[in-house]
Image 1 (cartoon, rainbow, N blue to C red):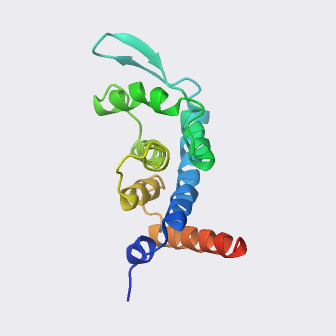
Image 2: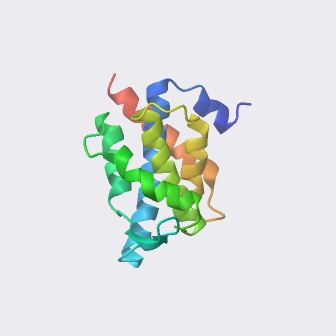
Length: 155
């Protein structure tokens, strides 16, 4: 019996993208909820010692760029500093928020910036944005069903 991973990986490219977009829209809600609780997100970049303010609208802009198929809001450039800060541990988030942020970043990288990012990695990151103990299989299955139904309706 095929696993959900097998089912996802066998999808056509456009449906894989649609599933990733569905899951990343869920991850975006995790990010936005965190931002609503923390009105200002800032950190000190240790190399230069400068205070940086996190662009809270960046993940939404990244998803909009994926949907549009182009980077009209300079998303790639805007991600440079916060991603470096996260990798340097200057900018830290709870795990679910970190996975939400990275999943959207990698969705953008894969589908707009044409980076070689594994589709399954993106799915895993987006699923990890959900609370620990969530039914990840059901979440993925529902995303596959939704996107498959949407795709069937457009044929």
